Length: 122
Image (cartoon, rainbow, N blue to C red; front, side, top):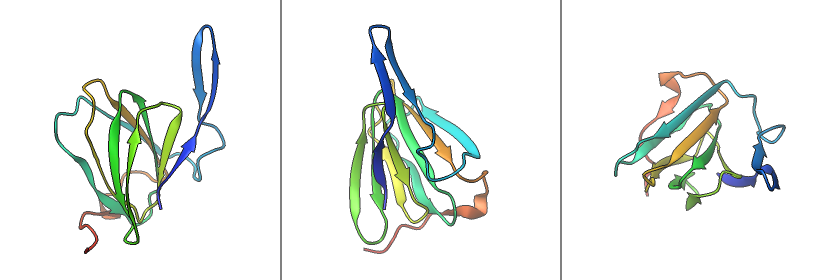
């Protein structure tokens, strides 16, 4: 099941520095970011192998998650929060603020055969 983790953040009068180091349950093979999203939903899939870590580094968005056991909505609105998505987590991203930038780390290189687009039956 998807889970939120807190990223180590150092704050002083100069600002904030958030670190992603030794906290992800995988080695990073791919990084992508989503921005400039209109009212569309993104995602709409799960994976055979890929684990993902999503951080909204600017603005905010919501991620709906269903692992065929439970459903949950996560709001990402702080760049020190990271959502870990397991391969079985069918997810959609939506309600992006106009300034939102959602950065995602992935455990696998892109492979179209890794994607499962059919949602779980309710």
